[in-house]
Image 1 (cartoon, rainbow, N blue to C red):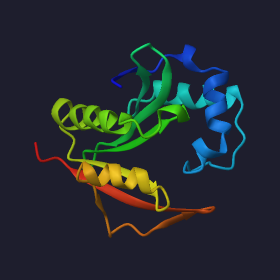
Image 2: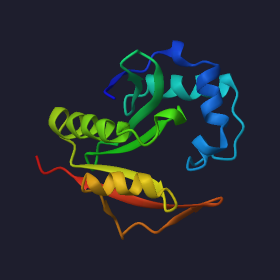
Image 3: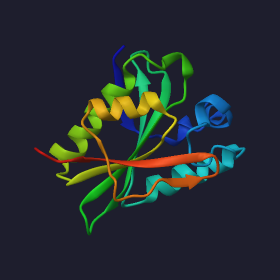
Image 4: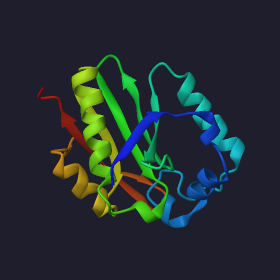
Length: 165
């Protein structure tokens, strides 16, 4: 299944997106995993990202245009020329279908070839084995300089990919 990524549009803030954020399976590895969201919360989050000069928010779509997830790149750290990464495939029917690999290819091109960042940095739960395997497949390395960050029940590890382009 091939996916398309687009600049996020506010009309995608809807009940489906809200259901993703409040679904225990979909949100269990998110930093705010135990928060109950409403549409205003999501609207504020999206507006902050879209208005930010240091963040990019993309929507992930199947070929039939169905919105199935989001990609956040940012914030950018101009001093270190690095960018942070976060992805969510909200539609569980699309898990395990190679979408993460396509999003990683897009991310690497956008961050390294198009914008020449030095590093992509991400945080991932040590229990999110599928995500860790995906990141390792794309040569992300666990950065030992960062301590494991405990947020509630999550143990977050930091992974980094250096620009070799």
